Each structure stands twice: as C-alpha cells, then as structure tokens.
Image (cartoon, rainbow, N blue to C red; front, side):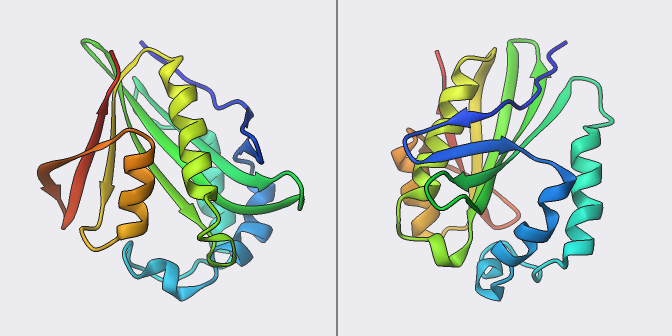
Length: 171
C-alpha cells in the first residue's frame, strides 16, 4: 500500500507548500477571476468554501491506497501565493499512478509559473513508486497543453468528460 505525504518542493523561483486550511483566504483571492473557470467550469469559491474544501483535502482520501497530495504555489521573491498543483496517487499492481492538475491565478499567468510548478511536481513524483502520470486537459486549452508538453506528457486519443487525456510514463 502506498501512502504519500506532500512535502515542500523547491524550484528556481517557487516553493510548493503542502496545502493548509489557512491558505484559503489568500487562495480565494488568487482564484477569484471567473475567467479561470472557462475550461474547468464552475465559479470562483469564497474563502469559506475553500476552507471547507481544504479541510477535506488535508484530512486525506477516505479510500485505502489513494493519496491526495495538494500544494499551493508560493512565489519566493514576492512571498505570495499564485496557484496550486495537485496529484491524486492511486496504488495499483505495478506501484501507483497519479492524476495531476495545476492552476495559476490570472495575474501570474504567462510567466512560466505553471510550467515550473508542474515540473517540480513531476520531479517529486518521479522519486515515488509512480509509473504513470495523467492529466486531463480541455482540447481548447492551449496554455495547459503547453505546460503538459513541457513536463514531458504526450496527448493521447482518449478523452473523459470532454477533456483529452495526456500521459507521461515513468520507467
């Protein structure tokens, strides 16, 4: 059985900090732009909604063999939060597979932050017994496709709920 606990991940400009409930207020502002939901659906959460969600996420998955690993992205120089990355790691007969996702707040987009944060997450997962990484990306979301490509993912012909499956196999 694989159980992973997020730990701080450092990249050139970023600290990926394990999610805490206390991040909700600042993250509500980071994620407040309705345009962020163009491809993922929904509307921005209030700080109270995020607090409730973060409480569930920090408590961990109720499913044995599944780890919820969530980080906020902190810009080291500006000492502010700018988004998040996450991985749901599920044990299987070959070790584990991870579904990952990333979101960068609108003011911090087009600066390579999502690419750097996702690269840091992928590097961390490569150190774990994870054999496959998966991301689901809306077919029209060119920025996320570019992040996936930079992290080594390949677009597949599979789709789920209108999103294309991207995959990275770790040998």
